[in-house]
Image (tube, helix red, strand yellow):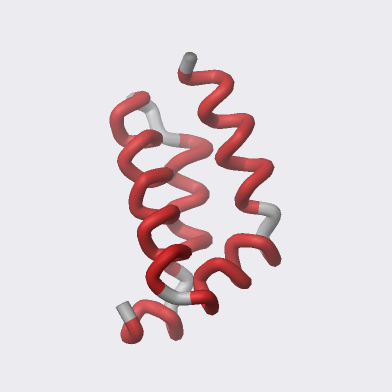
Length: 64
């Protein structure tokens, strides 16, 4: 997970979670983002910087 810190993985997963064509893709991206954020605080910081919580919240509301 440390190798992913220097990438745009959170941004890319947020885009997939927001624009994914299938709900399962969106849900899997959201799960992976959560696991990355729990594993390293730098991912959590990036998630906050990108307003990712709000994006994930809106995605999950649409999926339901």
